[in-house]
Image (cartoon, rainbow, N blue to C red; front, side, top):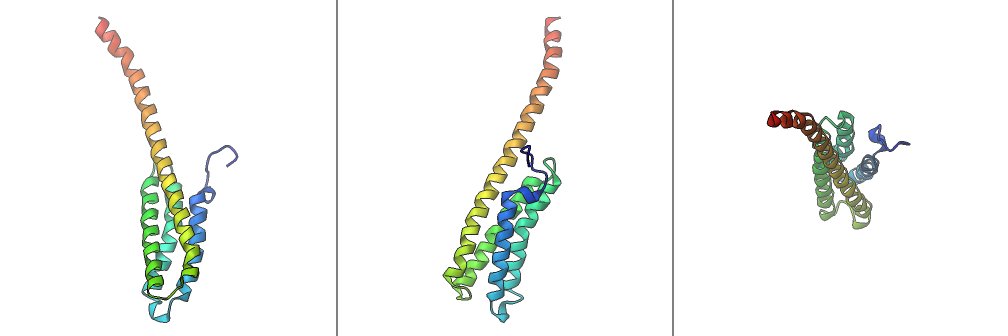
Length: 149
């Protein structure tokens, strides 16, 4: 990213933080009782994987692709994960200390995803504005000539 252009999802801070969150979440899922192995534990693991996976998929689609759509899916998966781990905490499967690290990563990942979505929208609007300006510049001279006749 020497020239300021992100060439890979691996360069995105949102992806890096989401990966850290996935690792912490997997660790917490391992602490859940065996009775929850295929229920809550499975949901935690799927949600945890979904966040960085959707960031990667969206960025790999490119600006013209479905980048923003995938970032929004990642935001939804982050909400699911936070809820699932909050349930595990309230059920007494994990304690507040274990939950604290994940809580910090929820907040940071959420902030980064929000900023990424805002950046994608801003760039999209700039591209639309640029195209509109080019269209006006292309059509305007012909319209002026038509009126002057």
